[in-house]
Image (cartoon, each protein chain N blue to C red):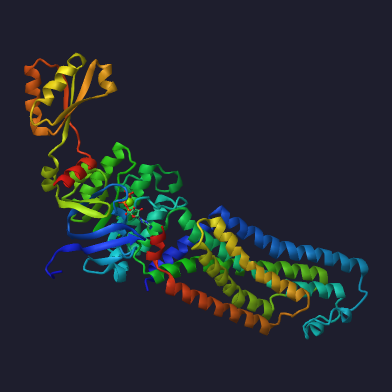
Length: 321
Length: 272
Ligand SMILES: Nc1ncnc2c1ncn2[C@@H]1O[C@H](COP(=O)(O)OP(=O)(O)OP(=O)(O)O)[C@@H](O)[C@H]1O
Ligand SMILES: [Mg+2]
């Protein structure tokens, strides 16, 4: 590990197993200061375990970790003084008020006594919790709990922020708020380690992502690099007039680069007297060609939409590479 | 040692526990029954007995198992009067230890097993504390309220007992050296023991109730003390009480040395 590096997290062949099950398998990572790093994987991929290993609250089975150049197994407390972790479940004591929760953690994290009230008020304002600041957390909605947990994560203004699925289970408005929050953090030069199973979220927010499956990294790179590799072989859904369905399927199937055209059930379309077809093997740049072909053949098109690639698509694409 | 964090965690544990009904109820009911109810009830019965059959017999007939200087000190009292004072000062003494034991055990059950139950443990392990600091914080968070409940219980008992002995025998008997030793030396040790046992129990179970129930078993040895003394097997003396305290503190030292040597948050998380 060279001395001039600006990497804040370095792992080498990091492995953690539980009995015979390997939760994190030979993970080698290097994350630079100020980066937003996406850790993308399904349930059980090893995201939470990795966050725990990096913060010294779980011991590795083998391999090495350095965070800020420190070893989490021996200097965990010094690392944790400079990291903030938003855990998967908010882990809030429902018997405390929002304000008391933040004041308590401000004290635990060593925020100087004279700054605590101001810091807590700032965070309550940032996360729009002032109105309920003095109510017990027990009565909070899921979104409010998540905002409070985020505020707690930032209480000591950490250098690295770990966010473990920060938007899972939230409604669209709450998700937007959390995304804005992450952008705000990155503008302030903080390093963000974002665990998610949402590809769109990772693409939108992250500089680089690692795609993780069963504890192993399948791919790692900038979202742009991965994006172009991954955008191959995506799908487009097309809505045509119900009377044209058979003709349209035959036509699209014969239009390169479409690999497969299949009619799918879409109740919303049926109610409108139309039908849906999913085209495989095509992506955004192919849309004008598809529209043109359909129009030339007199097929009535109501909607053409590229489908968001799912994590499955990513896994599939990566396994093919 | 990061005392700021240790103190913050300990204080929050104690304060929040003392605002939780499952914790506060036993902390109020047990002292009330034990330290007020029992001396008042026995006092009223003794009082009636004294007032009914007047000064008839004297103390010489009272069991010769009494402490040596007890007779001199309370010469001139009737058997019933001296018996009540004997009850207040000696027979009841071991029962007092139930208080700090139970109090620290309840708070510890809340702060350890309750932490698991409420799923707040994860926020705690990510704090910038060392394993030793975290353990110390959790111990202090149970020990301080446990000891305080013990001391408050002692003060209440002293007041109630004095009123009752005044009523029954026209004397004030507390505080005396034996009870001061009990309250300030043995009590805090009992609180620490209750805590230690509950902490160990908490690491094996998942709910506050289970931890509390196992922790409560520690009260059994006290029952032995009570029965033993009542049966005349021994009599508490200042020396015996001081020694009892010493033994408890030694046991505590061993328990906590083992706990510090073995407590690892990484082990906790591996089981989570
Ligand atoms: N303490 C533990 N004991 C046993 N197995 C564990 C433990 N922690 C994690 N695992 C296993 O390790 C694997 C990785 O778990 P991990 O929680 O890291 O996944 P994740 O990517 O965070 O998943 P999710 O999206 O569900 O949060 C899973 O198969 C899980 O069952
Ligand atoms: Mg997880």
